[in-house]
Amino acid sequence: EWQKLNYDIHTLRQVRREVRNRWKRILEDLGFQKEADSLLSVTKLSTISDSKNTRKAREMLLKLAEETNIFPTSWELSERYLFVVDRLIALDAAEEFFKLARRTYPKKPGVPCLADGQKELHYLPFPSP
Image (cartoon, rainbow, N blue to C red; front, side):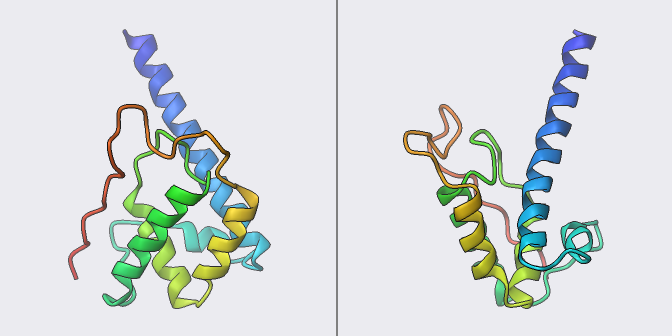
């Protein structure tokens, strides 16, 4: 049981690392070589830059999950990436990020965008202002 738990933790960390590396690659391809790590850095103190962008950021994040393979099929969307998309919106780079993500990580035909048995995408709660 202990070994299985260690394996599960290791697997989860590996998947998180892979997702982060995908995002970082796209950010660097967009010209954010020096800023990629700080754009991806989210802490408890992170805030949404503009509450008007929250809905747009959520829609863009769901669109990324539905139309690209930037997230694994079994991945539940993390609020962390809501903050990252918000930052991209503030930098007027969200649409370009999406276009590059679609080209770099296209949704393969026949691959479901939802986890097995999952009926719909999990929606993220609105962060408090």
